[in-house]
Image 1 (cartoon, one colour):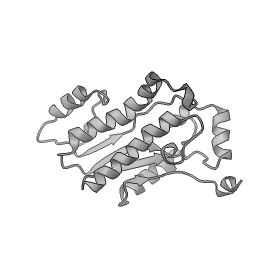
Image 2 (cartoon, rainbow, N blue to C red):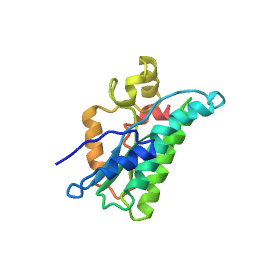
Image 3 (cartoon, helix red, strand yellow):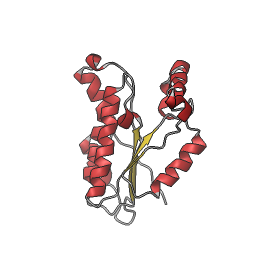
Length: 182
């Protein structure tokens, strides 16, 4: 039996209330965090407010979920990161930093004997995931840069495979090696 609940995970009080309401006979067994926002801009254009807006739904939220669950017997603690957190991306310094935090926290959880998996997704097909915010120009640029979009079927298969791997950080990305060679 699966029960879904939503809350502002960047609010520590909301997270505490969420977990306090979990009945003992139906404990939380997994956490999957998928939130994020895009706000592209050069480093010099990042204000404290813009950076906070980028970090809050990822770094703050995942930190609060980590603290609320670190003493629970979880089967999985999965966070959706981005390839940008590993490889960087033009005008996405804040977004890359937020995702690098997720990767580091998953590695820390694993090192502490806790479940932790950060999936550094490449782009998904237009209209799915974060690519829903991208223009056709952006999508062509991604393909030319060697990271064409994943289909939903590919993404789901990669998700299932990643859950079986003994790693803290996995990069489910479609790579076009010819484009990468230039």
